[in-house]
Length: 314
Image 1 (spheres, one colour):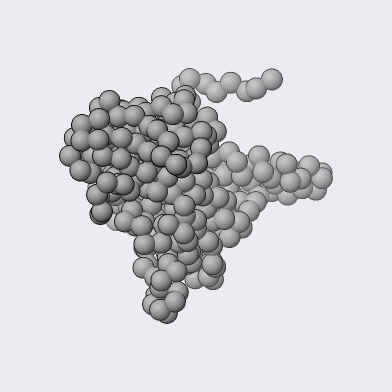
Image 2 (cartoon, rainbow, N blue to C red):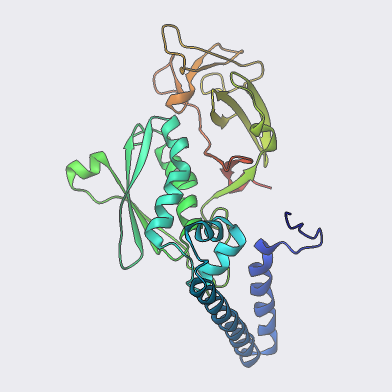
């Protein structure tokens, strides 16, 4: 029988922020009061960490800590975050980074691209390589920052930086851009969404989960107007603004490209009749250089989330 969660259960995602607020408030009592508050938190964290470590040890001694149980622990957001804080996560950082990349590969693949994990250094740097259409695509920097970076940071908050290499940079020998990652506050908490200063926010959009193949839907995500469509099992989302006439996609339709395959999908603006290839990150087929603004999507099988700039998030 499934365990029911109490409707009064606290939102654990905000617990870390509350701890931070309380410690900051304790500073009003002077430096000594703040130091004592921080010491108290450290002692409590270490105490429960030792208990969790012993608990896992006992389960292992009983032969119950098998692959299935480890996968269940790692798959629960709350449990996984607590284990991460105490350095007890069952999977190493490289495995977690690879799993994070696997979660965004459907989005990258929908634009003909991919990402490859090159290495995780001892210093905590994750080295990645963008492949396919994402390399050199006008939206590649957005794709990286909103999708890849957010997924990697959520899965492995202990990393210190993300270094990205493109195929062109590999050939020229130039170094890829370095994306700094904020450290955790006293190893106490981590937000499962985007980092506070990464300029993006993941918003759950319930109506996208039931969008039928061939359908086009317009909605507001946060405060950003978004147009979304589904092609078979693949979902695509863009800022709701035609790159040519700059009007919303009211009345837009989705059709197969003339002479194209069954998986081709062209979004047509009802106003200026411009055509956009949704599988190629919204490139305009009628005007060179025109391009829609794609928005990353993540799906866990039940919920669909869209990443929008933090400036327009609620």
